[in-house]
Image 1: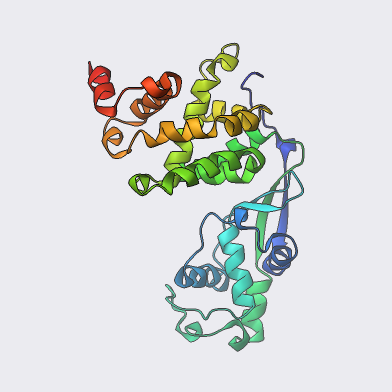
Image 2: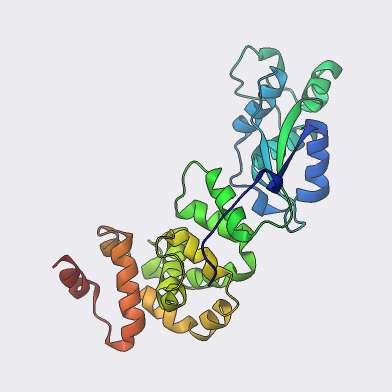
Length: 286
């Protein structure tokens, strides 16, 4: 395994200024339909406020774009471009405006004056683009730094974008587990993170020579880059699913992620002789 080293430089990014019109054209040409470019879908009211910020001339936050593998994705700010694009296509009227913009309330793009349309389309936004050549680990670090919270939902979103060719096996196992009515209480994103941690425990010996101080998320990413991961998971699919189904998640949740991960590892190696949750927690607390 390689050392867990991330060294970014100014050469790993380039910055450009684009108008809203250019961004909307880019969206339809390169991004439309790519769901990985959106962290969430904004409400109509939020979309209106993104447009309102253009009308009042508010200084706008920069956008971040990943173009490393030729698949242009908005890491941060995609919901704004979606809003601009849909408004320009007359898909929603402005509503719930914050400032003294009553004259625009209820208007579609087609209803606005030529001056207002130009103000929207010619507004300029700074765009930071990740250059080709960055490792997936580096890209993950950039994605994570742009997020306000690095919880299981964020981890899932980032890995689905960057490690999609290997992460799909983790997704498919989580989907299989939550099909079981007894396990629907468990959040899919949390379950996927749980699976990743289990796989790290299985492959732990491969990480011994690497930095032992590396964050678990970094180790998971290194594992997702390993060519042997997908074959291993496919060969041990039923075994992994049976381990995850041994825990309802509700009891273990009160004792934290570490207890859950340790119990999963014990069950994986013990197989049919694995202990119950209650017996494990009794020993864990002692």
